[in-house]
Image (cartoon, rainbow, N blue to C red):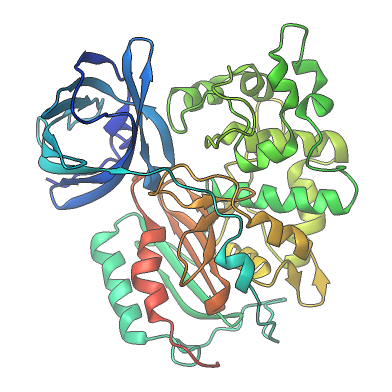
Length: 473
């Protein structure tokens, strides 16, 4: 049976509270971070679990990087000096998953069983991750500015001409056809030209997709432009300054310290489970800004990162308040128009504000235009559309959750690879803009939103970047 967390998002691998049903003092302290693999029906899924001591015993949450789900509580834990048991609840057809294993040597190993599924798991203790002061990306980024700007239309060449291995790309294409059923498009741009372009399962070049959280990276660009245009003053301005009606005498004083920088880096500190109950309740609320600001704080602003779509939407609201234009109108004037991006839709909240973190509809080719813009430090032919300094600043790491996750900048994911530093805009279900300056490479992919575990970033790293040959075009 195919393990498709789509029907019960591997968030389904982890919904409900983690309670301790019998924690005993043991020879190995469970507290801290664990990372590992769950293998079900030949499908390998990497996860990370965080155990902390609460008032009632051991508490914990699970991160599932491929689904953009972080901090999801898990349930029913029994821990002794030699064994561990816990359950990951699922509301989907596959039912709950029960984990039983042995503790020893800094690892947790055992079996996974469910109503229809069988498998194994292995978790390993991992040390604290230190946030680097710089990244290889920041040190080595020297874009190769060429003459092939798709000002009106893309120049389409061939893999061989752009030093791409055609045989490897054929393998990649077959992998999508047979093993990635939700993928609809793959566009590879090298040296500013489309070197490889494929569409799958009836998709076409002009078909726009809801790129989900890829939208956040566009919002990041708009904030950089707004600072240059003096629509905004600086990143240390507070949310309370822009949206005072949501801050009253009873408001937690720490919330008044939340700044634009905290919104850009997902470090505002609110309690939130992405793709969990808080996300769904936010979508149903009549006032998105009020819901986001009224959330309780889990930690002080700036202390740590917690992925939260409502924060990027606050940026859209603030931009509209200060500019007098919706985020979409602002983008049409300063970003989409100059770069030639044709938006085919962008959702709004109940108050009519453009969604700052989701629901932007683009074609793969227009996604690639945005990637090429950032590859060239915000320059489009002879026009500096996004300030170069802002592009570089956006790629400075803001937080690291655990070893399984990449660093995070200003609403961009920073791919943790010392040999091929890159950055990416990633959306739920398999929407991707991947940019690798060292290879002069942009990759755009779209998918359905059926399978939240459709890890297209891993696909690019396994199949596309190895196909890039060295040498000039």
